[in-house]
Image 1 (cartoon, helix red, strand yellow):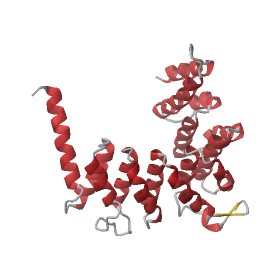
Image 2: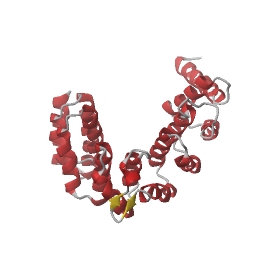
Image 3: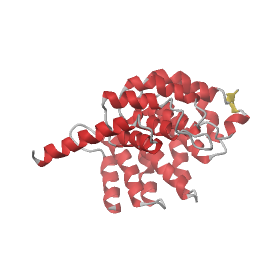
Amino acid sequence: MDDESAIQAGETLNTIQAIENLYCEDLGLRAYAAWWLGKFRVNDPAAIVGLIAALKDEADRTPEGGYPLRRNAARALGKLNDLQAVPALIECLNCSDFYVREAAVQSLEMLGDPSCIPHLTEILAASVRDGKLLPQGEDFSQPYDSIIEALGTLGVTAAVPLIQPFLEHPIPRIQYAGLRSMYQLTQDTVYGDRLVQSLSNGDLQLRRALLSDLGAIGYLPAAIPISQAHAENSLKLISLKGILETQIMLSPFDRLSDGAVQVMQLMDELL
């Protein structure tokens, strides 16, 4: 057996063992198996079946009521690109564990199936009335940022009136998610500019989130501010890569756009 064949055989054995571990009695091994299958994007029919079943697990539960296995399974299913997971992930939106709901939303966004849209908009609608946030919408009892980002990614323009009130949410991260999605859905630069202005925030974690948001929307006017932001160069490069990818798509067939060239120069300076 050559080296490549040996590696492939080892990967197969690991996959088989990971799938088997989804059903074992050791709760730690079960949670790790779900994480492993997602990490290495094991799109195996048996893995999909096992991960979907894990979304209803009752055995692996923390003293606070969380479901570690469900969380890992929900995250993994978003990476495996199999739409049969969508109904089960939608059911997870009613789970008592906030992090299961958050993981389910993020995976539904990755899978891109529009059947989840009514369920996501319903959660926002329950917190908005007459264009304003209700008290329950002012807390963080729901993964509002993930829901809003998913609706932006899915291009749900009908959700604009529901997202707009969250621009005034007391939690900055949710505000930023709203600005990100509003730009995606309207292409109005006022929302992109507000994200850029927020890069002066004194909280490093929030600046990191902003870098992710600006890269996700490919907002070219943010390129220079991103390169100058007080954050790790690695994160700035990831953000600029998102902008570069957008600029390449917008470039003429025979050459790179001026914006793409500018972003590449900024990335070179950060290396």
